[in-house]
Length: 302
Length: 228
Image (cartoon, rainbow over all chains, first blue to last red; front, side):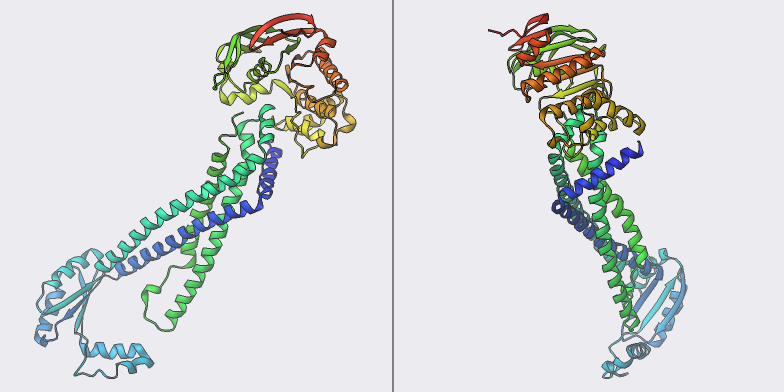
């Protein structure tokens, strides 16, 4: 391909975009909104996966005990538990210690718990058990469940499963929505290009008569579609970056202000934005190209 | 060389545009294809441009069977032909020069070649002074000459003209036909589909007459003969 020919394609493609500005804008907005929804869903799903990984890596089981339990029994339990396979750490925390540390954690707001004393402490005694590998966590939890005087066992798996279920629903519903939106974008872009094709129908006819190949005719329209698609993906990327940036720093601020909300520990901006750009740019470009080729197919038959 | 053997064309809507047409045009000939509208002239032009396919028979152009040319090969086949239409079909956002140059650009000729051949083509049709005018500022005759220059700039072996004088006054029509005659003398085969009696009568060339899709006459050095 000659440089002059490439210049010609680019120039014609830009002219096409300029020829119907309002339709071009509509196309850009439609593809940007489709990709924006995709981006929002993906950033949530990425973060949910991140949370799951975080929880799984903790490999912790918490054992809440019945309030009637005796000190002797507790010592016996500690002995039993530390002999289980995979257990690297067992720590008993009495309800009194738990209340004290909770009060401390709340700092100034510790006054909220003032009404609770040793006598009416609502918290249970509990064990924290750590495993050295994630695969042991499940087994430890199952063993703990059948121990006497155990009221409740908390461990990561149900939480992980719950989060994964949400992520899956989001993924399926989101992808369906996105596929629909992308399809609509293809329609809108191809319609826009069809308008250009129509206004250049005579020209296309002339080109065919003097021996232009289909691709020679197609390229300017492909450039047009590519420009629309890429503009849409850049616009949506900018939106996602901006919003994610805001959410990230807002949540970071909340973390720093002392709220114990681990789940707000979001993925870094670059961990979300770069993968998204890797998806958006080719997707936007691809949609533009497909739409342009699609809208030309009939008009090349001369 | 162009050869039609028992060529028939039935359009999708059932119209029998051509029935059993047979003729051969040797390289370097000047031939008029005449007939009233609907006689089948335009269909022959369309078949030769491979804009549509014949239903029956064989069409050979420069020893190539048109039926054997695939979709992809059509642009390259058309580059051997120069075409001129009644409505000129020029691009209005370009000057005469650029319209002619465009025909070379699409076949990716070099800039050097374009600079050499475009002025030559414009000179041949007598339009050197109007090279930088836009089609809408030109007369019909001038526009048709630009179209001719565009058709000829890639040195086609065959020039096909479909009612080239249909939009022109008699004087200008004669001018255009004279240019075509010059082109023909340089060795290009010229086929003119027309119902313009005057130009056919002045030229006294070979005339193939069509009536309702059938060939009725094929005469050398003839004038226009009205079909009953």
